[in-house]
Image (cartoon, rainbow, N blue to C red; front, top):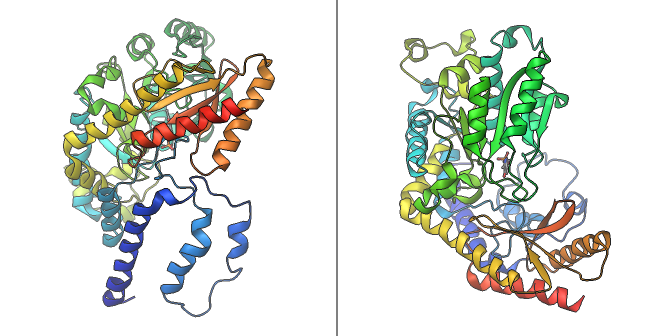
Amino acid sequence: MTPEEFRRYGKQVIDWIADYQEKVEAHPVRSQVGPGDVLAALPAHPPEAGEGFAGVLADLDEVIMPGITHWQHPGFYAYFPANASGPSILGELLSAGLGVQGMLWATSPACTELETRVTGWLAELLDLPAELRGNGVIQDSASSACMVAIRAALHRADPAAAREGITGRHTLYVSSQTHSSLEKGARVTGIGAGNVRVVDVDPGTLAMDPAHLDELITADVAAGAVPVLVCATIGTTSTTAIDPVGAIGEVCRRHGVWLHVDAAYAGVAAVCPELRWINDGLAGHADSYATNPHKWLLTNFDCTVLWVADREAVTAALSILPEYLRNRATASGEVVDYSDWQIPLGRRFRALKLWAVIRWYGAEGLREHIRTGVRLADDLAGWIAADPAFEVLPHHPFGLVCFRPRWEGLPDEDADAATLDLMERLNASGDLYLTHTRVGGRVVLRMAIGAPATTGRHVRAAWQKISEAVARA
Ligand SMILES: *Cc1c(COP(=O)(O)O)cnc(C)c1O
């Protein structure tokens, strides 16, 4: 493709994306295709001769779009949001345009130094504790961030493990509400899912019980195990529950165990001073902390930021320097090589999109976005609470509201089935998209507000649809 051809098709692509943003609401939120439909519409074999780009754009509309679930649709309330704003898309395009592989400082100094600067900016915007600031790195996902934390913690607990493999029994501590990436991390690092201990939660708040954590660690140490890492969560995936980070941190400090804090979804809310209390307990306790601008902070997937208090623990655990990567800058010790801070070697220039986002919106714009989500969720929770046909769970000041129809008179099991059935009908309508979880064994619906296109009008219409569907049932 010549630069002239690129210019022509590139303009068409930008127009296509702008049209999509304008008309996203016209699509059904959740894709309506069945398994295999998209596959069957695609040629079984690749073209022998090049076909040009016009056909790609045509097939994008005809074959691909029906199989798209519209995460930027104002009626998307499933999982957690995955914001893709204009400046982040443009930053992503520039990253692809430069085609940089930023594994070492020497492979593009700006890739490394912009990342150091913007992760520092974000730490300041979130008011993270001093020991974490300056030690930020962008990862593809919170799952990778937790893998890095586990590997670094393992190094601190057992420095020989990288060379000799895990010899003793090592343990990790989570709660029933912790994200599944911790268990996956235990499998991948060789600690083993069987060595993941599940700490009790308070049945009301679903927050981890630090006293039970203390008991489990004490018993494991007495039995000869080496506790490696505790994961506390600020804003769990299921219900946005918040673990008592300070009290958990005290237990970690007493036993010399690494504390990883997973704030993948909710952490970015700390851009708002009135929500900074979610960081309580981090200072002096968190060895690592991760949050995802790619969920609720207007940055398209992928962009997780991980900060560590002790960068030596991370690089000692993950640094490898084969001959073909040796270079003067690395040898001088004056530069950061971020490949030493992650699992893969290669790395994308993700800092560009986060830089574009922070510069476009400014701290004020980022706060405004978070506050809009919080306000809309508050309004929704109020309407649900006022409707006797529904029960709303106590919600945290983020964008997620958990609730369920009461289905008076139905036994629990039938009520749960009716709730799931209702969700399926609503999702099939194409107007909105909800997901569910279980709390105390009961099915509850999750409505996660936070797509930039979602306004009060959309949330009100969604609630009307939900309440009418229950009234009719
Ligand atoms: C979404 C989420 C994750 C996983 O995030 P990825 O970036 O998709 O790996 C981890 N922890 C929590 C609390 C989450 O909400």
